Image 1 (cartoon, rainbow, N blue to C red):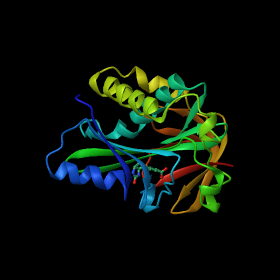
Image 2 (image 1 turned 180 degrees about the vertical axis):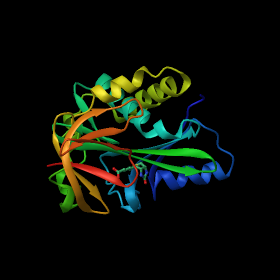
Image 3 (image 1 turned 90 degrees about the vertical axis):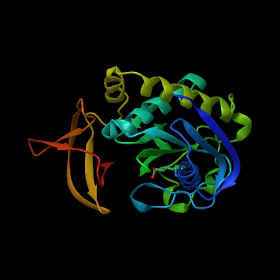
Image 4 (image 1 turned 120 degrees about the horizontal axis):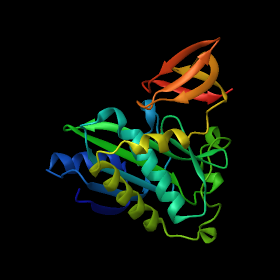
Length: 234
Ligand code: BTN
């Protein structure tokens, strides 16, 4: 893939900007990076607070293996962070990157013009006070202050684009094992949440070759594909 990075200081949403570029003919591999967003988009129609200190990146990718796009990108982001920093991260099914038990990155895949527009929001050195109060307990940054950082934001961005290129150019499915091994949920009690409500709870047993989560609910194996479901540790 030909990765083509466009960098902006501040935008509404890198998803929106990339969709507009795609309307004007941008090809897969085009990426939009911003240091701040005024209307960041999150999963399930939520907003994604995007103050300065974060990395806000969207990448135009082929839709062909649609089911795996978000999981593949999660593997790419984890690899990039781990290679560029000394931080060990986990993937919280299905699309959050966790560092020290807190969410440091969220990933959103939207479809536009028959492409996947994959958005990656990383709390690089976002200050705690800049997080909305409701996420302060669950979100964190890779670095507490910009001065603490031992790598540049652009190093992480370039590493993500390289890893995405590698993963999306290969037929290999070895990354699926890496995705499962990176999970922080195996063996944990979780609540299954649909439309904001806890609908069930159980113990996570595995992540299968389709990146689906298996939860033991009262002795019954329940397979969960992503959809509108989210998982919270019980
Ligand atoms: C989530 O955890 O809900 C997913 C958040 C995805 C946020 C990223 S930041 C870059 C891109 N632009 C957006 O407006 N959203 C995604």
